[in-house]
Length: 362
Image (cartoon, rainbow, N blue to C red):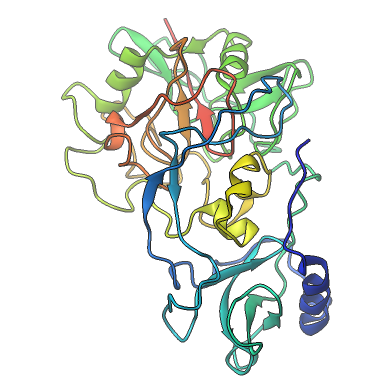
């Protein structure tokens, strides 16, 4: 597993945070994301980096190749002021916050300051909410327990699927269950060599952190297969060949298609180049305003009722050269708009927090 980099003061700051907030009010959830737009304008750009040479199924992350999508910006740049006095976003061990004067943070209910995560004078510190779980990437989370049963297939299709033209497609982005036991697999954990199969279940957190060959095997274990590019496009665009699942004109927020701060920048608290080799970190998709449960955006649906084909997670196709489509929760425009979005910069063994899939069948 690749090393997890933390800012030098992270452990100390965590103690400050817990001490200032107290431990009695701990919450099991992340809560709301404070100041997600503060101090960081969205810019999307290609990030050039070498695709990871390690193609083993349990590799932690691949570096981003030219064509991958990233919002850039200095997460602690005090020259880029945000709203409400914020001097930019920051994070403490993955808990998102804002760079604020300590007096201003102290006046904010249930927030505490942590030094060492913001540039500028010493009184400007990272202000984070109390009671937020500090994500540990080494501890697997299972949000899909109890959400593993697919609905009956429609129109003669297998379970979880709907008919589209002459084939069937999963109604929802795929999540994973273990072959045999049927227990849910963590959607934040690469399956490695584990025997898993794909399921299409409303309300389940879809599987990220998966490469194309693993996705194809998971589909096959369910008697399905990855969609061809032509099938994927037909399912997303519908019979009228729309640009987006819901129409020709993109409407922000209908799908999970935008995030003001790139999640890796937010989680690691920096935009230094090393973070792009850590994008297999399980905590990235556990941030607020990241991947959403399947079908959460009811307007993000195709003519034939397939959900989340635009945004949420990239979706692998069967292209042997390696293609994933539809964009993800940060961006659905950089490599084509909506249904036309296609990333071709990686081989079939690449995986990161953003790569998901759905299955097709004859």
